[in-house]
Amino acid sequence: MRSLLVCPDDFLFRLLRGTPTPGEPPLYLVEDRGLRARIARRGAAALAGDLEDPALYRRAFRTGRESVLLAVPHERRDRVLEALRTAAPLAPVVVLKDDARALDPAAPGVTALSAGTIGERVIQPELERAALRARVDRLRAHLAPADRLLILLQDDPDPDAIASALALRTLLGRHKTSAPIATFGGVTRPENRAMIKILEIEVEVIEAGDVDAYDMVAMVDVQPSFFEERLGVVDLVIDHHPEEAPVRAHLKDVRPSYGATSTILTEYLRAAEVKISQKLATALLYGIKSDTLHLERGGTRADMEAFAYLYLLANHNALRRIERPELPGDALEVLAQGIARRELVDGVLFSHLGPVAYVDLIPQFADFFLQVEGVEWSVVSGIVGGDLHVSVRNVGYIRSAGEVVRSAFGALGGAGGHRAMAKAVIHLGDWRTAVGDASPDAIRHGIAERFLRALRN
Ligand SMILES: [Mn+2]
Image (cartoon, rainbow, N blue to C red; front, side):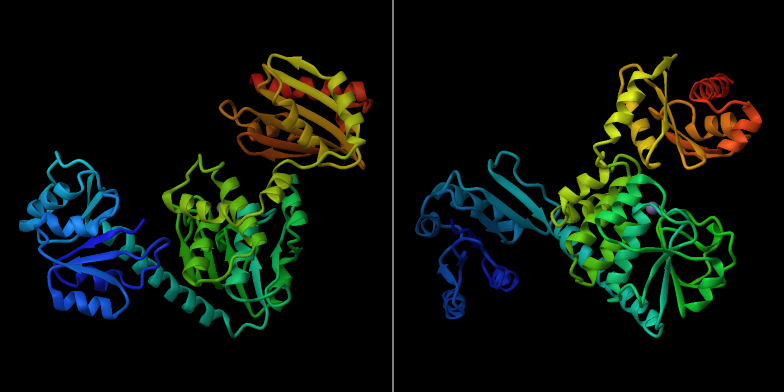
């Protein structure tokens, strides 16, 4: 259905000609016959007549339900609306207004579109985009001389960091030899490992001394002060963590109000009109999701906009596989035994799996056991190589898992974590020295006793 554009002069024609219309091209209603002819010569449909005369609208409307855009001086607005309503009482009307006078609230089907709204929704975002594009140009110009650019991530980088690195490399038009992604710590958490495996992203593990081999260094989702290694002045820092120490970098973009660095990079890519591949969109979407807990924590409007944009481009099958890692068939036997030997004490579910084929199974089962009714904590242990691994999960609003695990197992080996997840890794030799017995029963008993004591303290 065509729409009607009502305006005494050529303002709407100049504003809207060339706008792609999905259906039939619009019909311009103007007052001047000469103007009508000029519009027609340019290939658009137009009628001329008195805008305050219902006869004009009777000629223009076919069904009476065409939508109308009205741009007339405010002193004529009521009379034009009345004429229009006489011909088509049911037509939806949008009034473009540049004055503060409110519309007659009794006029049904009439909505106002103010100049302020156009400024806010159209012009302001364009100005921001132009500023971002200029920033991208500066960043590209600064980094262009580097044959090899190092994109450095925090130790044990998370999905937001990995996705941001991939996005920066894409923004610069580089590849993995001219801009490798690296960390000092390796990637250990199961979801993060699943992400780099399924999306085929290479994250190199390097040492502080290796940094000198690169011409320039860029950091995403982290700042120089977070590293113990001394790095000198880096070339670029893009991050959303608050600046604990002033960031020393040639170029920096630090936005603590953002829920994810992936959101900043998505804005860069869009402003510079860089094509976002399905793989990159999937990575960035996962980065935003995991840093904002599905937009529930610290997600801003910018995060939501980036999220919505990426959502349409991402591979949701891959995302599902990353978020819910597959269980290999023989892991079911381990799980069956873990379930059979579980022990529930005051809302804490303990399960010792014995030797397991790979370490990721232990946190995966810890996640799984947390779903059992009445369970607030799950503590799952298993043996890989010569180490006893303990994974702890909780429902989130109780004591910090990291604290409890450090207090329970810190004296025996490496122990720590966050609010809702934590782990400890203890050499079996150290366990024997401290506890005396490393039989499955002794381990089960020793873990439960230490954990419950730490929890109740
Ligand atoms: Mn982040």
